[in-house]
Image 1 (cartoon, one colour):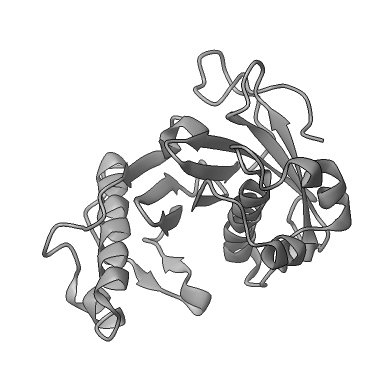
Image 2 (cartoon, rainbow, N blue to C red):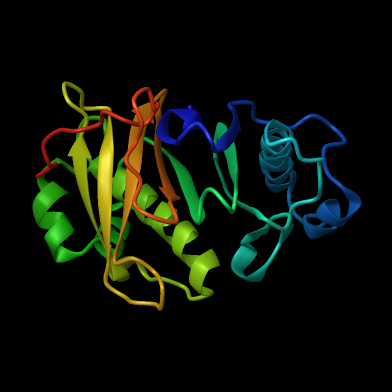
Length: 239
């Protein structure tokens, strides 16, 4: 599913399986979750199994995926990537740093956010645009907003080492032509950092009960060639 949102040069792997096969963790990875509950260990192993499938797709040998500050995954030298997991879905994406500057993905259940969470993660401008339809019939725009901001943060943090708050990015969605279930979004960054563009462009999809978002930040603005699997998502702004 995640591959629908990213260019061909990004290696994507995902699974809808609840548990990873036994033996998929390296000892140093297993140590990170040795005291966690079974559910946490399973999702930790499953998303790393996805990461190693993505490594193989890039022609890389399998390696442990350890954690840095705030749990950020540590990738092999010259590789950028992102991982996500929620109940029933796990995914990992990788690319060569020579081709992509940063990646950020997130998956959430396509369900309404609790009202207090919606207020906490959204700006007044975002509530004006999508508030009337947030939490209504699928897609749930409030949950999609949460996912998009998570993708923004995962893209931003490896570049800056600075944590970004929910009120430091303003997201505006566009629907794909003729559909309510996929499209693009722009995230205006309300915090600056040297060498970081003022906005990120991403894509979103609601499918099989999940809201999924992804950002592939290029080194320079890129015009998708004919046949690029991510081209062609245009449409009206969600208001």
